[in-house]
Image (cartoon, rainbow, N blue to C red; front, side, top):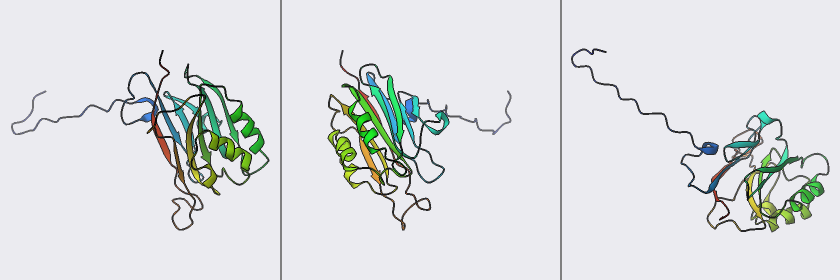
Length: 193
């Protein structure tokens, strides 16, 4: 291509390389990438991504109102189970407690709220989540946006993003009646071989 005199060359930056679970930076080798996104308002649906695979999302048809939990094997990185527990309608606190307690040793539990996760969340369920290391489950209120990464049968490294909460506040909510969605992401070191 011939250019006119005085025409400056156009430099085009390459498109950024897409990282697992849409992280900004690549996870180091021998780690699992995760991203937990709570729901926000009526239209912003919660998502759970692990190793670049959506485990729970609206387009999969397996995300719903309440607390959404995916259980993943820490050894293999494969999903073991994924369920939604509606905490607004019905008595789902006891089944959720049993689901959490039945997660096998050496598993990761990835939890996100969609809409309301607290109205019918009973003390026993809160204690089961608190026993996994949650610092915020006792503070969850109506329509709080909450995300939590837990380990069963092993300890996660200190400093790993594990939990975040954003409470509904009529004066500060991003969406009418709902707080903004929140997220955490990180890289979980794999089990040493």
